[in-house]
Image (cartoon, rainbow, N blue to C red; front, top):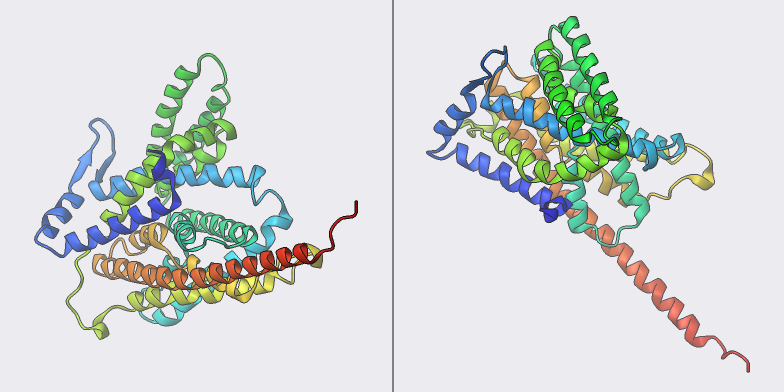
Amino acid sequence: MAFIRSERIAAFLLLIAAALGLLAANTALGPGLMELQDAHLAIPGTPLDLSVGHWISDGLLAVFFFVVAVELKNEFAVGQLNSVSKAIRPAIAAIGGVLVPALIYLGITAGSGYEGGWPIPTATDIAFALGVLAVFGKGIPSRLRIFILALAILDDIVAILIIAVFFTADPNLLLIVAGAVGVVVFGLLSRLLATRFRLVVAIAMVAVALVTWSLVYLSGVHATIAGVALGLVMVRKPAMHLRHHLEPVTNGVILPLFAFSAALVAIPQVAPSQLAAPFWGILIALPVGKIVGIALGGWLSSFVGPREKRPHLTLHGLLAAGALGGVGFTVSLLMNELAFARLPEVADEGTLAVLLGSSISIVVAAVVVSTLAGTYRRLRRLRLAAELKLASAAPPAGP
């Protein structure tokens, strides 16, 4: 299972699953699969009654968000975001990568009644972006990799906040408080994992996590937020250990299953002029908005902080970061489902737009990252050749 932890493999599985979902939806299998996706599965004796699709997007995806939250906490503690000076520049770029796509979307959809879908093109799929970087970015310097990683992580934070604030409907405060109590209990129990009763503690934590997820779901807050909260409160070392074991499951099962389910959309048989405004807003805002927003934010961030501590990021490097940021996939698909939950036809067009916009970003990112990596490899070879020439021209050492 170790190979599934590879960023390249994770990105490949996600892309294949999305392609299979779209293909299956437009064959004779499509109606049956969509009917299965809409079938409800209830837990007897509880108020939980979700469709198969929602068990995937609200239930299984909460595990993915738990893993993301654990990684975020680790980065804030000992990683690339453990100080303001490290976080400020990618944070400014991330803000640009959220604002510009949102503004482009709002500009295209103004007056259409679909302006509420503005969060969809603001998200970045960190797993996919890093997978593309791993495939095409051999030779890219570590400072740019660190910048892109920090940017993607901060983008995830913004996405989590957007889901929590803008996609919460009629919240039940009593259930929210009960869920918060569950989060606190989960965090306290994680402190006991180092004792000899760790098996009992682990079983209790699983039970508390399931109850907490249920309370959050029933409260009206999107259930993936429960995964985020539980990941943030768990003690860091055992959380990182658990993340290591969950990573093959999220990469190999949960994310591909979600991508397949989300992409299970029949391609509308309409002329391009008949497609709703959100389709064009998402399709343009994802690749164009992210490149412009991240590049502009990255350029502005170059003026922040002491000159000697500012990272040297070229325009080529910022364009590469922006192109990678335009790969929306997982979180964009989730936001599309949430934004147009009551408008299934618009949601279907939004799904297609996310897939097409992300695919365009992948192609652009592959080209930009490959050329950038090639430039750095050539510079490294020239530098090495110059050093060897100087070494050979140096006079022999004395006796």
